[in-house]
Length: 207
Image: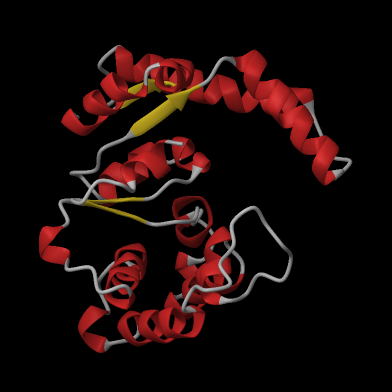
């Protein structure tokens, strides 16, 4: 919801899919080299749908998305010797902007949403010291109900109440540290955003 709302801001560039960049591309694949990271982002991560590597139907329709153009642009920029020391996540988002003709000089910030980012906050700030962290907190009862509903739809057979609670506790602990001033960031109460989005979005934009 926040990503969709932020996407309407003319000075923000919102990447449309989770990337699991820090959780996987950095943690698992960075030691294996740039090609391994590139392959993960384009073929395995949630962002693979933007590169035409998603076979199953999902809630977002990317049938009109310029998959090949995006893939070719990203590959060219990623392996350009001039960009050898630049971060792949930045290059992927710049490629996205180039494909859609979005001038970067009017963009103040780009936005990437991956829930697992909550586990890599220190790494994010090390790599992007000027980053702004938004943490969405939802009522745990609503979160559990949503996950139960998803399991009824997906029927994975792997649903775990413990898993849902454990992830909520990680987010809650992060939100507590932000509110305590230990970590820079902004906590967004989901229910408050839904009930009265305008003032909450104003606070987010101010932040």
